[in-house]
Each structure stands twice: as structure tokens, then as C-alpha cells.
Length: 278
Image: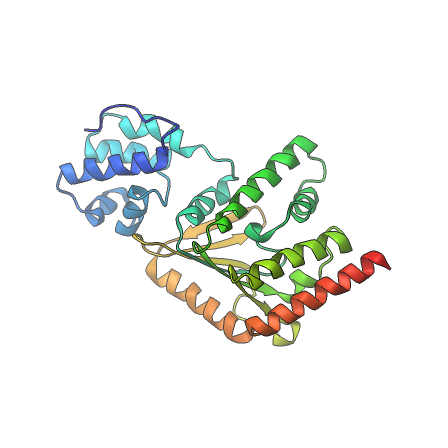
């Protein structure tokens, strides 16, 4: 049975996952076998063990019962549950930090990892018009921290499809949107990200339902994340992930090439800059 309590300063999710693996293997139980007893997939167990997915309080209680760990996971899952992100997005944000590749479609706003500070502030203020400045400041700070993942020159590989709506909507006015688009242009020109624009003329497309994100990992199955207004679902069922992967592939086929997309984004940025000084 696992012994000492976890240290909150020592990557508690990863440590708790490692303890889960030790406890499972001590009983000579496979990930699939444990998953059957927990009513989740074997890949879900693997994602808990490698820290891609957090162990929820409900699962922690079930794990303690199945593995005979005397409340260890129940006591410690509270530490790993703490997150600076909303509940519907916390697991996806944590998965992003472990991902090797991230591919996504954004129909209405720039992806969070690509937003500038002024753009993010405008978005959060629109979502929460009566929130205090302290609340908005914290939300913006957390979003910019996610963008810090791109400081690594190669990981994750980020490939985004932006609906043309995203670059035509003047979030924050000409100066703010021009700055945001120039930021993306800089990331494209330094070969840090791949961006395609899905033009209005493409008409109906495969992801009319909304936002989509696909993530792959070095030692875990891929995940799909679908998001709506104040809700989101992280999916690991292989068939479901495969279906969303096809959706993304169809999007890229309908979108402009990366070269054409860069030209459209640069032209839009220049247009906003002209409006700013008009």
C-alpha cells in the first residue's frame, strides 16, 4: 500500500499517478482489469497513472476500495484536484502541458494559447462583464501562462485551423486585434506553429458544431476535447477520437493552405492597423 502523504509542491498529480501504478502492479492487475472494476477504460487508467488525467474524488474512493489502499487516494486526490482553470477545462489544460501535438479548430475566437494580453482581457471581460478587475487579471494571467508552453521551440507541435470569423471579428478594436494577429504572424514566420484559415467561401464544413482540439502524447493514447459555452468534454474512446480526427482532417482539406492563410492574416492585420490610424 502507498505510504506517505503527497507533497503538494512535488507535482502531486504525477506522484499520485505513480502511486496508483505501484498499487495496481502490487496486486498483479492490468490497466484494463482495474478499469473494468472502476467502469472506465484501460487507457483512462493509463492516463491517470501518467498524470494526463486527474484522479477525481469518486474514482479515488473506488480505487481505495478495489486496491485496498486504506483511503490513501481519497485523502490525497484533493491535492491533485486543485486547478487554476474552470472545472470544465482543467483536465484539458493539464493534458495540453503533456501533449506532443495539439491540433485544433477555433470557430469564434483565437485559441487561448495564441492570445495576447489585451485580446484575452477583452474576451474575459465580454464573458464576465460584472467581474472585478482582480478576477479578470487572474484569468488573463492563467491564460498567458498556458501560452508559455510555446516557449519550448519544438513541443508541443501546434496546428490550428481558424474560422475566417476569428480574424474578421474586431475584438477590442483595431489596435487590439491587429496586435493579436501580428503575434500569430510572428509565430508562423518563426515556424513555431502551423495555421490555416477556413474561409467563408468554404460553406458548410465538418465542424459546424463548435470548437475541437486533438492531443497526442508520448506514452498515452490520444485525446479529443470538444467545448461549448462554459462546458467541455475530454474524450478518450478510440472510436470517438478517430471520428474527431477525421473531422479535423476534413477541416484542413477545406481550409486555405498555410501560405494563403498567412497572407490573409497579414492582410487583415494591416487593414486593422490602417483603421487604427485613420
